[in-house]
Length: 388
Image 1: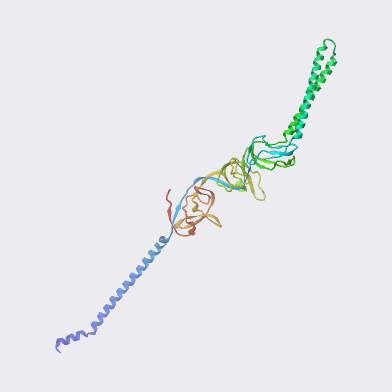
Image 2 (image 1 turned 120 degrees about the vertical axis):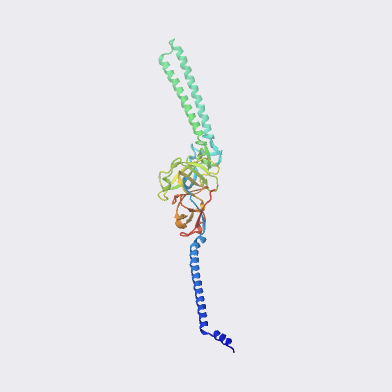
């Protein structure tokens, strides 16, 4: 072994040099580890903050909102009730009655004032009329003879054959004969009137509603109602209205009547508001006059909407108004885009939407639809509805 080899061997196995290299490696690894930990911590803080900030906004549902403002709407009162003839005329026997020979009308027929509805047998009355007519002729003949005798007596007064007393007697005889003519004529007229009252006649022009008599039936003054007529064919609805709503109604208010079982609507007008309230039901009757139509049948049932005035109110689509056991409500988007429940009172429902009579000013951001899927306090992203 030479000298150079000895020096190399001594340097390779120097313990102090290996120790220094290990210390440098440990320090470098520690610094790198600290840097990695600090970077990871910073990344976690930043990432967590971004997630907390962005999470609710990215998960919040999008809802369409509207601000309807105020719209002119009619204030209406809804009611139900029965249909009837505005003037219902019961017709019965006026005279002494008898056997019904003919019935000349049917329900649904239009009749004029005084038109014969049913004919009653009158053979006895006809003979009585003939007898009285003959008595009138006898009385007239007696009066004619008395007048002739008076005229001849007056022509003889100037010759002295007849006294003034005779003239007075003959004048009295003539006057009595004329009076008997008048009595006989009056008796004849009375009998003819009685016979004419045997016919059942319409008291006024109108529509025949019912018929309760048949040929061969014997009728008299106590028989009851044989026909019912609607005077002029005029109809009405007897609307049952609550005590509170009755206060807002006046004679002349317009109304729309819809008979049950049909879709036809008839324009009418309030002509009488009940002055009393039923103490049991707390309802009053409003009578609505409506024109005749075949679809309007007295005794039927109908619904009515009565316009009691007009005013300003928000009008919402039907999808915006919800309902539960607590009543009607809407959802509005308040501060922080949080959903709030707002109770409302609903008025008229029309093709334009639902009028809200109380609970809203119209400037709120109201959820237009999908309210059933929201909950109070929920955060949403509101979007204004597009104008149509």
